[in-house]
Amino acid sequence: MSKTKAPINKNDYIDVTFEDLTHDGNGVAKVDGYPLFVANGLPGEKAKVKVTKLNKGYGFGRLMEVYEESEHRVVPTCPIYAQCGGCQLQHLSYEGQLLAKEKQVRDVMERIGKLENVTIHPVLGMEDPWRYRNKAQVPIGEREGGLIGGFYQRRSHDIIDMDECVIQHEQNDVVLRKVKEICGKYGVKAYDEKANKGVLRHVMIRYGIVTGEIMVVLITRTSDLPNQKKIIEEVTKAIPGIKSIVQNVNKKRTNVIFGEQTKVLWGEEVIYDYIGDIKFAISARSFYQVNPEQTKVLYDKALEYAGLSGNENVIDAYCGIGTISLFLAKKAKKVFGVEIIPEAIEDARKNAELNGITNAEFAVGEAEVVIPNWYKQGNKADVLVVDPPRKGCDQALLDTIINMKPEKVVYVSCNPATLARDLRILEDGGYKTVEVQPVDMFPHTTHVECVALIELK
Picture 1 (cartoon, one colour):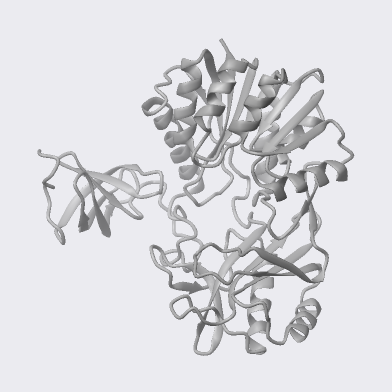
Picture 2 (tube, rainbow, N blue to C red):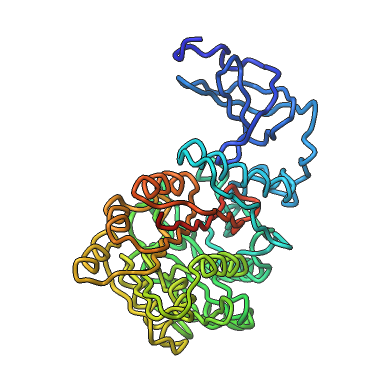
């Protein structure tokens, strides 16, 4: 079959068997070797599909009817699952999700990393995989004169209004309902992105799962919030546990959520929460893990892999607000954290102080610039921990690791594909990947985090 010509036509109805899932949760069927991606299809299922789009090497279809269902198919818990783009895997049982995520990690390790003999453990899942998110961040719109808020419909900017989200903490649902109602009552108009008019763009809610503290962030197009005093009065009365109301102003025509200007309208600048026994101050703009229960599972595994005895110097690249650094500092001689975002480093220093941790130092800058400089100055790490963004580690950082030769590298990853690519580079540079532990931080979505232990050969 030539690569250019698909063996099917647009709008054809065809019978297929799904063989696999893509990394974004679509079923994969093949027609004479030509892959067709179909939302809601599950491996092993026989189904009728309508062909909706054809590209050079692959196409898309819509699921019309399932003849033979997977043993792992379930009825989604959420009533708006079919329209909403927040979750991708609610039609797959939780056991099925964990198996699919393990397979995804195995596949990229072999295909991209060319790693044959690495131990890949079963995914560490949650006992109760619902209601885990401590942060809600929803766009606001208007319908019949009232404010609506929810997730965008798949592949669109139409807001699906929601009263509850089964992966959000219940408290976030309650707060969002109240905020929509009160802002609507006082005539606050929703932002209209086409006309670039209106006021309220997004509402963000942060909830301290251990402390019960609540922060509400109103993201507005204008500096002025109509009836601000009355809104604050009613919100604080309606929501017990609220500690902070913050306004962020974003005047730009953009789909980036936050603007540059943030001001506290009422209460504190931060709320507090714990991961394990470490306390964190969380501001409106702080990066803080949305599933603290599984974050602890992930960090405990990273700590176990680091195998610290109290004599080691540890470098934590991409340290954020110091979450992993502070866990490591309790067991290491000294921890050096580096992060490109100045506000995050400020938070990291505050969090160290908050916990009485004196053996952690933090620097602002790109890991791939700062760490090579430290190395040149003779600062060598016994253990190096990396937790990079989705694009993985920068080549300059990987080169420094290979030159610096720390005994161990602990790699925390939110993207198995870039993890596999980077492991291959480290393997070629004299390291051995010992084991990989996937952790399910985001049940019912396609994301999977991993911790890998890498040792000098």
